[in-house]
Length: 447
Ligand code: NAD
Image (cartoon, rainbow, N blue to C red; front, side):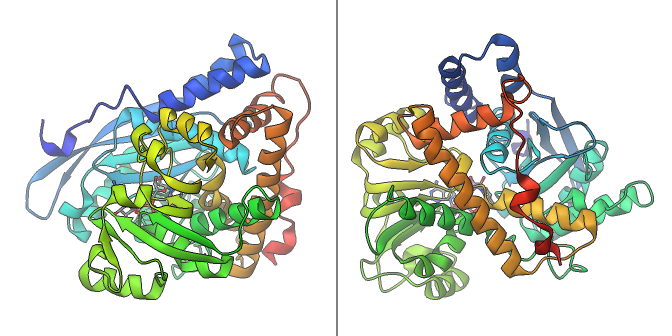
């Protein structure tokens, strides 16, 4: 097998196992029987294909690619599945299945009426030119074309994909489906705003800003206490860098940040603009000054009020959980805390804000983009941020209320209980449980 198609087995501690273990705990807790359990433990569709492309070196390359649809509680043809596409060396089947399940739960917790899906291509994108990435992205759409659509499955950005790639996806999808699909743009979210204005303003910082709104509401509810918060951020990509960008507006001082090469610490505070300058000039934040070079492990164990995990899955291990000195952990990345680490953090009374709530901002604004494209309307950035803020506040309140309702020992268990209640109780006939989505975002947003 060439390195392009190497699959890393991820069985033992996979995202899917973490989710399934939690779901089973919740099913037992809520007395849900076997039939309904299967609704969330199984998949609608798991697709694996090999993308075969000729790249700029003149050679044929093979890349393993996936699109997994987990569950959509809405009737076919009304609301689509939705979820990101990853271009990353770590992409594999187990990861895709876990991330798709996570999307279904996230959509339920942040009240977005889309099913959960995930896709990806196993590749180290640093090794390919922009032109090669375009060829691979177009091939991805060609291979999965029949499974994508505005009312079938909507793609979004994730690790290694950005608005440029979303623009390439959208162009390719529109070209392949011209005259056959109405509103083809709605099949892809996270598109550039400049591209005929069919992208959505505010989509790029939405995940980070959504995380801020969750923390803001947890502070309103006194679940998080303290005046100005000191913050360490792992990850300086889309989620992490934009979290830092808005930190001062939410009464936070960034004292440390890290990315793949390592990090930098400065107890006097780090500025987003200055960090960006170092990143653009050097590509390595460990060289940022004034500040002290630190390792990723140092960052995860620094004393701070808030530790933001915005890099990738499985970063908080049991060992680090027993040594971390953060008071609260915000999960912006998908599944960054291993289950055994979660148990240690719970015992140590460290509040963990789970990703199925905290990182839902991108999904919410992808949904706004889908709605705008379906109606041929445009949203202002102000309307997007206001809608995002209200949704995050309302659903943070719902998770905190679920803690009490389900006697939960963590916000994670509360959020899982809320998701299962919203996904399964209506189809089980337990209560009507209509989601109030359209009321939450009245049409004035679209004027
Ligand atoms: P990205 O590719 O833009 O950035 C990832 C960042 O993490 C980079 O700075 C990288 O250097 C750093 N990183 C990777 N491995 C690391 C490690 N071991 N230690 C320290 N830093 C490391 O990705 P992103 O879009 O910001 O996504 C980050 C996480 O957030 C992922 O788990 C993703 O699934 C999740 N997420 C992203 C979005 C979104 O809208 N982009 C939405 C929801 C969830």
